[in-house]
Length: 420
Image (cartoon, rainbow, N blue to C red; front, side, top):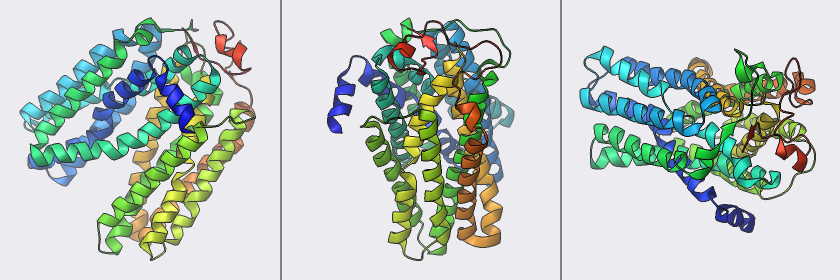
């Protein structure tokens, strides 16, 4: 297993692109926590703190697919370099002025979210041109999914260390400055500068005119909802046992399971079409969430259940990246991946909102039941749309992506969605 990943990382450009994207995504991955800590330090109440954090999340959800569409039209550096600079400068303005005057603080947060560069979608659009072989692209997607767990684990830790050793304002400044350096490392690389979106049919819906993509977005909206519910339910479980550190154990186990599952998934070749494999992986993911509602009193047992529940997350994401690549209309691949990021994030936000009342009604067991129910809804979406997903390129009208499709020659049905 390790040999395959080492061979991949030794390939030209791969380590730079992966590392740069990870670092460049730090501001996005830590924004909610950094804004909450900063606003609290400035004297903001919890209502204001939640509103400011939510504003950034909403702005990012809107900005990602819009910027992704511009990237497909004009290339990566021309769109994402200025976006990264404006986003970091906006967070710098927030750090300088604080939360008073409030309209200025809101404007800074809004601009920072709207201009967050779609580095995730950009990286996934690059893999085909950098690696060529679909099997290596498949492995890169798995490594990419695993890398997200590193951001979720390491990003908040970096913020807390900066706050402890310096200040909340410094955490905002440093994280965003480092993020710009990571983004520039990717965007000034040869693959990023050479990449161009494939010729595309003008359509106001862009990537969303693909029925297959809509099916995927519906599925992962509910997967995101399940994860959002688990994050809150884990805190409730810890509170019920009088030890807030228990939540850390549970969420770390969830992330550890996803990391292990993703590494194992990407290390081998999987026969059959990715759409069918995705249905199996999402089903396994949903089944893994169901036992959490049993909320065993033993913390080690609950930690084990969370670890098992996380195993199929990264594999499901990695497989979804391949399916998105197959179903995105030609010339919309970055936008399509950006919609995935947005939908997943909105689902997670809704999950955290819904699970609160559920916990107040039925305690932590009800919270984990929300996660299980959301997982089952994800399975239901795939089941209801299996015919749409069985036909890659399911776009009304002429089939998309039949031109400039060098990956189709390597693996039938595998489509890069762009030309190198």
